[in-house]
Image 1 (tube, rainbow, N blue to C red):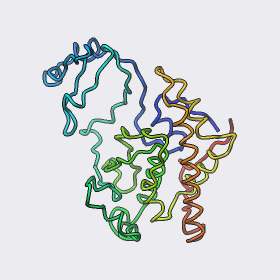
Image 2: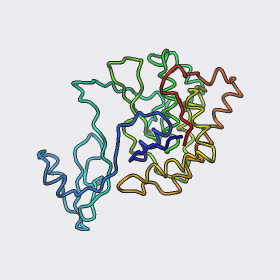
Image 3: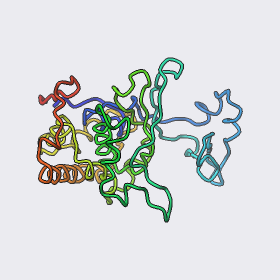
Length: 281
């Protein structure tokens, strides 16, 4: 297997999994005063900068949620580690469409989402456009596995490029909740896979490969992230959690195969160039 040279924990995992659906990202040490505050032409952004009681430079920016002094980013005193993501094409050049994730959480303390109470919820999804044709449901399964491996419970929406209609991949944006609690495996993230019992053959083979000792997922991630300017990126316990969660995913697929049969669960997608798996190292 070729170990990719990738500078971000999320982008590393998506390339190692061969999904390649996260914009290129690099870790950087940023001087908030010299490289953000003093060069911005946005007066609204500039006004969100302040000095904390600990005498650190902070700012909170502008957004729909959580942009306030209570959720500010603060430097030490003005140095902060962060990730720099490549811009996607401008919307005037490549329009994108935002889709609500069918397995979106209710975000309500007392009201559960439909998928939480209906074990046959996937059957309803598969009869609803755009999931009733094409590979979109398989893309959701890939995204589900991706989120489970990094513990991201917050996949409420995803995006696609409009130009390609339903014949497209989905873009994995907003991965900020990933790699939170290494000691907890949130099994509810895997509900789409458990309910639908569908997976690409290329994804299944890749996961089996990454479970082998010589191609261990945690090892590939660790080696990949060493190239980042602010390495180390992930604690060893996070890396070990990925190996543990990978075993959970493979067991879920095996349970589906036992229940449904291999041919009904595993979709042969090897007509697609992206499904090729390189095994040299």
